[in-house]
Length: 104
Image (cartoon, rainbow, N blue to C red; front, side, top):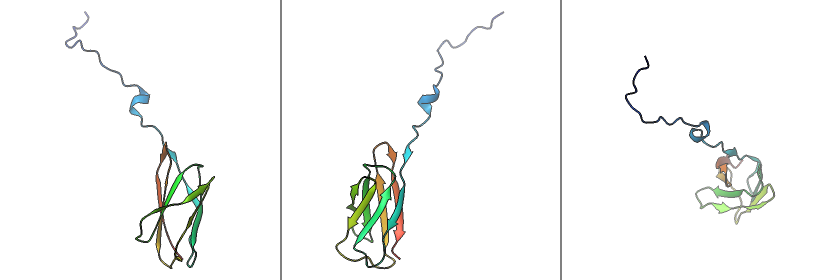
């Protein structure tokens, strides 16, 4: 004999794509130059068209100029030794990146 069904509600089978989070692409920063007495910060980003914001010390972050994969931020005053520089890189459909450097 076939056992009688107690509950007739259909069971939703999860699809593998619905539960898995979308894999975000990763941004990378390289060749960052922030030496003491310099009046600009330069570096490279792994993707074209990314937005780069740089925070120097406790001042508000400023948007760097990005040309292709290279970025530059001109400063009003010279960098001092042991100043903390934080670089934030963002782009649509990419995981945001935040990296800190210390002026040497």
